[in-house]
Image: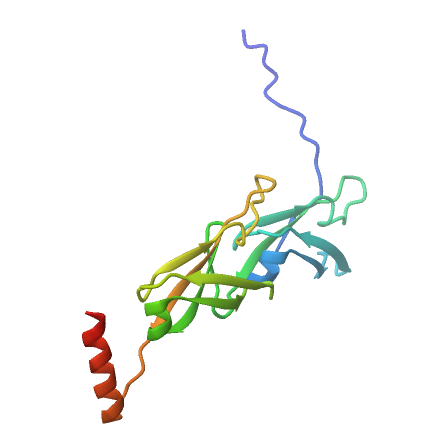
Length: 187
């Protein structure tokens, strides 16, 4: 004989609601308090504040318990699920926890080295020392200036700076001759 009853009691609740929100890569880096306005199925307008944590990734989901449908007052309200879409920011892109950007230097700076000052995505100043003999496309890593981890406290990615060597087009014959002399001395 089968004495199983074949049912389980599941607490019912109102419907969950789903929506998307857009933030910039800079806002994903810094975090943001976002006011979200939406409409419930019964036509009621609702507004809530949501803390977007620093380091959130494109496509990540935030869940706000009890912020969904509450048409039926006899059962608990549903939840609100928010899919975060991160829009790009000029000169920056993200790979895992690392933040990537580029800077330009002259061929002379590449040959003898230089110190380059640039802005990170949060507008803070970053100084990199470009080694003598740097090649076009070489990457420099600035430890701990990338995105914070959502999983591990005190863990951050790096800011990776790609150096682009700008080579000028020289047409002045006298300057070309001087550069040829210099090139012979360097060899």
